[in-house]
Image 1: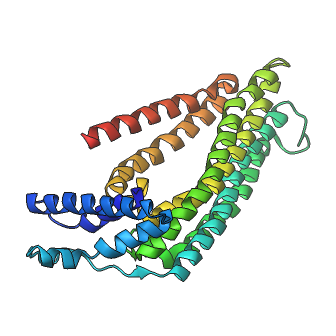
Image 2 (image 1 turned 45 degrees about the vertical axis):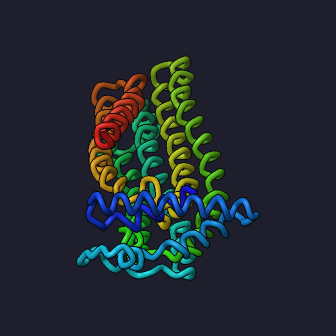
Image 3 (image 1 turned 180 degrees about the vertical axis):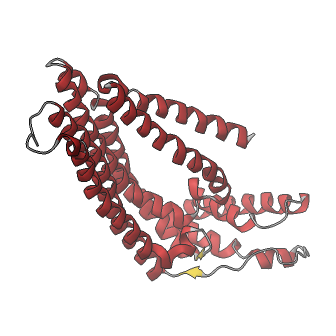
Length: 322
């Protein structure tokens, strides 16, 4: 039933919000619901009932003509995505999500290696024969050696997805039958995302224990705990990306939830804020550790940032909905 409501929202999203159009939309939804329940009572499967309802009621132009409603240029014409194109897009998103996950993991591993090597150098365990002026640069070199291939993976993934930019931007339509099948497949791939989210959250929650355990063996050991914390976060992020991409891909094709045209407008601001505060949090974390030696406590910047960001998202969503 949610598929029908989402399809109806997409049908009317480019029409003027007049009283006549609103009444037409309400009546159409009621008729579609009645037909849907009638088909279900006859023993029709979920996707079959949805497909029949949409095929019978889903032509907005005919409905406008029947009700003598004339609207000039009421809808922008978008290309229809075929089943083959949808399958290829899903396959490509699965591949690129793996590459992006590796890229993010490489960057976080590089930061972990930076902290680890810096402490080893400070304790004079390694690179003792290297001039003192050059020792501080060596961990940074290793960091950039991992950042470089990561950036390459990001660029390569973006290039491969370029031909499906019209799908990423939502400038397409779907046939009713394809929409029904994708809705059913979404139900199958969603449990994997739930499992990945649980595992990732557990890793993030347990990661500070590495610092606490390290502090039991001295201040230097707590710095090594920071490296382990970052590796655990890297593993969690990789799981989030690889398990979360497939449900998001189906939702993007169906234009539901966060990919609904209205929700996408909200997400632009939230994404812009996230692009500022999370890099800032990383900078504060590294600055506190390297300049003031506060590795044992600097990690709290991440949960604090997460709480504040989550509060902002909730507040913004409430204000926008009202």
